[in-house]
Structure formats: structure tokens, C-alpha cells
Image (spheres, rainbow, N blue to C red):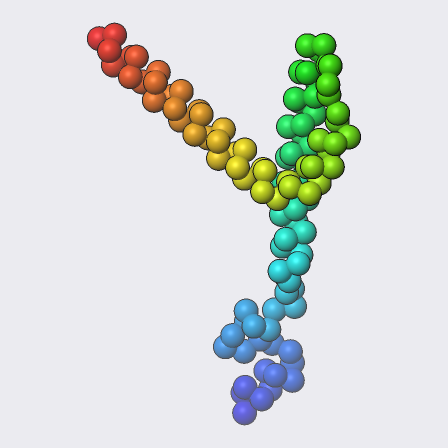
Length: 103
């Protein structure tokens, strides 16, 4: 009788996850991931483009680079972050080894 009354009130039963009002679809998650990685890639592309323009800027095609980022940002951002992490870890390890050899 109590369970019957709870169902009428709209209270979630023993499985509140399955009755959640806020269900996120896979497409929403992929959309958030895509826009996050796109923002990261465009930011990094802007930094690269500014650096290249200051160096002379011959052969730069920001339009083609941007199109490539639109298509591949979902894969490029995680790879770039991983490689950056590997580089930072390697530099830290080399600094530690130099420090150990000094003493």
C-alpha cells in the first residue's frame, strides 16, 4: 500500500537512477565532447598561427587548418594533450636525473 501511494505522488522508488528526469543521451555527450575539443584545438591553432605570422608567415593557410580541425578535433585534442603530458614528464625526469648526478 505504501509503494502504491509513493507512485501516485511521483516519488522515485527503489531505483531513482532509472526514473531520473534528466537523461543525457549519447549524442549530447558527444556534442559536449566535440565542442570542448574544438575549443581546445582552435585555441592551440590560434597560438600556432600567431607564432608563425610573427616569424614571416609564408605558406600559412589558416582556412585549411581550421577545416581540418573541424573534422578531426575529436581525435587531435586527446592526442595533443597526451603528447604534451609525455613531453612534460620526460623533461621532469631528465631534470631529476641531472639533479641526482650533480650530487
